[in-house]
Amino acid sequence: MTKVLIAEDDQLLRQLLEATLRPHYPELVLVANGEAALEHLKRQPVDVLVTDWMMPGIDGIELVRRVRRECSPPPFIIMSTVLGSKEAREHALRSGADDFLAKPSTPSEIRACLELAGKRHASSRKLLVAPRVDISAQPARAGQATPAHVVVAVATSTGGPDALHELFAEQALPRDCAYVVTLHGPEWMFGSVVEALQRHARLRILLAEDGMRAEPGNVYFACKGRHLLIDHALRLRLDASPPEHFLRPAADPMLRSVARSLGAHAIAVVLTGMGQDGAAGAAEVAAAGGVVLVQDPTTAVVGGMPNATIELGVATAVVPLTAMGRSIARHADGLSASLRQRQRAAGTLQRP
Image 1 (cartoon, rainbow, N blue to C red):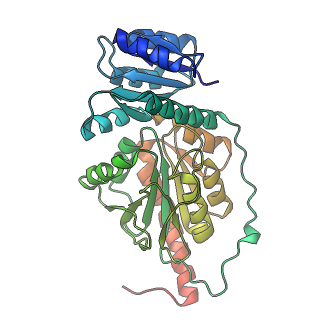
Image 2 (image 1 turned 45 degrees about the vertical axis):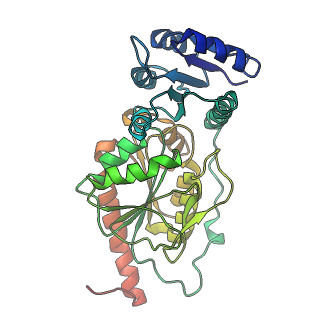
Image 3 (image 1 turned 60 degrees about the horizontal axis):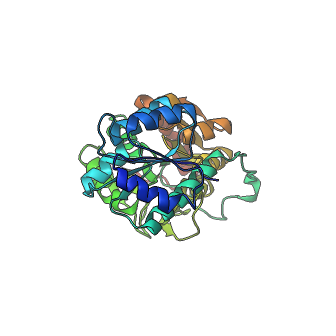
C-alpha cells in the first residue's frame, strides 16, 4: 500500500484531496505546511511526497531540498503548483523534485500521477541482483569493423540537469569520444535542458534522432519517449520497447546496447538519481570489458542510482562529481590508445 504525504496550505484543497484520495490511499497524511511535512518525514518515512510550492515558512522548493538532505529513505517527490511556466517546472525539477503536477488537476490526473510515483518508488526498493552476462555468447560479428571511437554512456535522473551541466562544462572531457545520455524526466524538459547545456558545454549537445551516427565531440540525449540504443555501426536507434523500471527512456536498455555494440571500448557513467535504473546495464558494460564510473553518492542529490551500481560491485571507480570529467578523460585516453592499436592491426586507422 503506497504511503502518501501531501503538504498543502489551502484548507479547502486539503479537504478536497482528503475526500478524493482517501478511498484509494488509506495511509494518506495531509499537513498544512512544510515544517509539518518535514517533521512527519523524520518520524515516519513515506513512499510519495506531494508538496505545494507557495507555502508560508518552508516553501515547496526549500522542503524538497531539505528532504533530500535530511530524510532517509527519500520519498518520490512531486511538486504541485499553479506556476505552470516552463521555467517554473524546470526549477522544481532542478531543486530535486522527481515530477511536476500542475494546478488545477482533475482527480484522475492526480491519482494517475500518484500511481506511477508509487510504482517507481517500489521499483527502486527492490533487491537488485547483477545480471548473468555470458560474453562468450556475444562474440564480435564476423568481419565486424573495430569501432571508430570510444562511446561514453551517461545515466542520470533526479538532480540530473545540474549534474550534467557541471559534467559537460568540464574542460578535460575528451572530444574524440561520442556521448549518449539517458536523463529521466518529462518530454517537455529535454529541449530546454539541451539548450541550457549548449550554452556552457564544450561539446555539441543534440536530441537524438533515429538513424543518426554517434560522432565524436557530440552528446546525444534520449528523447521522444523512446529508449536510446546504439548499434555496431554506431547508429542511434530510438526504440519503442516497453518501459523498464516504469520508465521510457530508461538507462538500462541504452547501456545494454552499448555493452553489446562497443564492448571494451565503452565507458558507462552513473550519476545522481532515484531508483536502480542503470545499475544492471552498467554491470553488462563491466562484463563486456568496459569501464564503469559512478558518482560518489555523497555528492549526489539522490544516491539511489549510484548506490545500486556500487552494490552490484561493478564500479571501476567511484568519484565525486567534480572529478568525473577528469576521470572520464583518463579512462578514455587508455581505451582510445587500445582502439588505435586494434585499428592499425586491422588496417582501418584513418590518418588525419
